[in-house]
Length: 75
Image 1 (cartoon, one colour):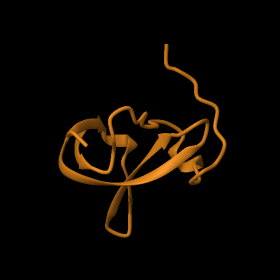
Image 2 (cartoon, rainbow, N blue to C red):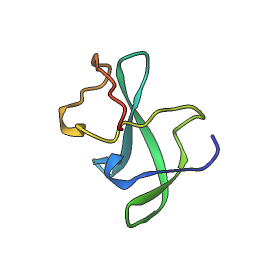
Image 3 (cartoon, rainbow, N blue to C red):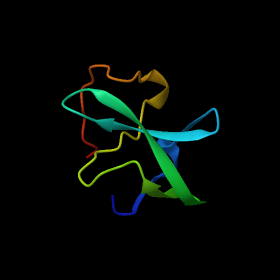
């Protein structure tokens, strides 16, 4: 993976680990990520994501790994 920047609110912390949810064929998928730096509303992720991953940025408390989801694009 190349380094990437995600919105800080998309990062979930649990038991000392960092995760983000991504879209995978109309399902959400929880992926562990490595955070190098967090500054304001942006977080630098150095591993755990691949090119093309679509990170989910809203409704995080409602997500469960591998659950069926409906994707709505922000306008």
